[in-house]
Image 1 (cartoon, helix red, strand yellow):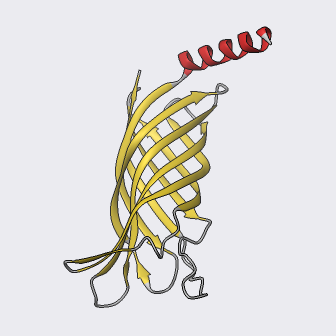
Image 2 (cartoon, rainbow, N blue to C red):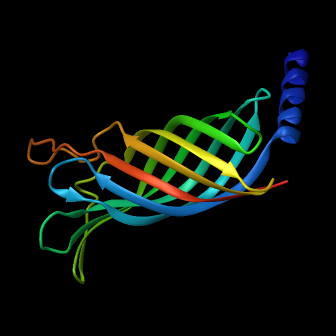
Image 3 (cartoon, rainbow, N blue to C red):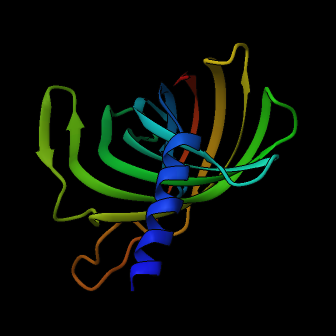
Length: 185
């Protein structure tokens, strides 16, 4: 038992020195799959931790606020505003010290949902599930050791709508993100 605890302490302390922390923020262009919605702009931002696991590979878990949703197609002003706390876990391949490719799952937890039409607003929690799962693919480039740009597409895997009156509407979150990252070194 002592050897196990000592081993865990060594691993945790070595990861503590190897990891890099940072912040990121940017623009979301989100939609909900289906033929009656169109894209909506939003904001994302949060914290990241980059942990190198080999010379060319790292794991980057993040905790982000994600403003997503969609606009109704047509002449009305109906918007679906969804706010999530998202936890993506990206597996990164560092092609060069500056450029990386990434892929991984994203787990999102709904914190607010509203239907908005002009100035009227209604709670949508009875219609939207509290959990969303997606798969992200992206790339990034660091101009300096601290400042970089990134782009990511997260394709929804699970339907976000709750079953209402025995009907399960189809609809998955899809979001394209572009933004800036700053790593503390």
